[in-house]
Structure formats: C-alpha cells, structure tokens
Length: 104
Image (cartoon, rainbow, N blue to C red):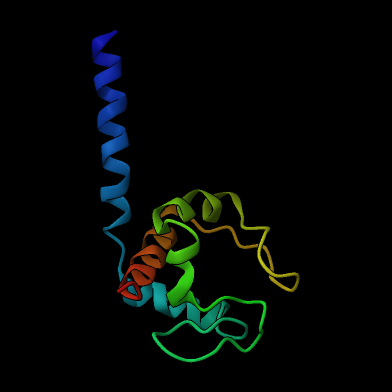
C-alpha cells in the first residue's frame, strides 16, 4: 500500500515538471497558427476579437498548469467563435511553456 501511494505521489510531482519541459518557441508557433486570428498572443496588443482574452492575461483567470487537462480533453469553452482544440502532450507542454513566458 505504501509503495502505491509513493508511486502516485511521484507521478503527481512529475507532471508539473514534464509540463515545464516544453519549447516556448513551438508553443508560440502553435498560437500564431491557431489562435492569433482572435487572441492577442504576445506581451502587448489587443485581441482582434473582443471576447477573446489576450494570452498574457490567461494566468489571471486560470492557473496555467491547470489548462493542460482542458487542452488534452479539448477546450470547448471560451468565446462563441472558438473552435475546439485537442492537443497531444508535447503540444501541451510547448503551449504552456509559451504561456509561462507571458507571465510577469
């Protein structure tokens, strides 16, 4: 029983570390290709669609690491015009790594 608990704790500790292994430049490329038509994806500027929050403010609404699950399962919330995205684990790591670069 103790070994199972220890294993779960270690897995839980590894998840945030793995998410930090992403490559921000690939995350930015994803954002430019898939998000920039509505969202402000950089450190300045307004979103093209008023209902689309600038990425630099997402950390004020959600803990960035908690977005990983939504990105894996498919984000269906957001503004009405937002398409559903489902990213694979490396894409999630890259995207979250990029979002972290926008935090103060």
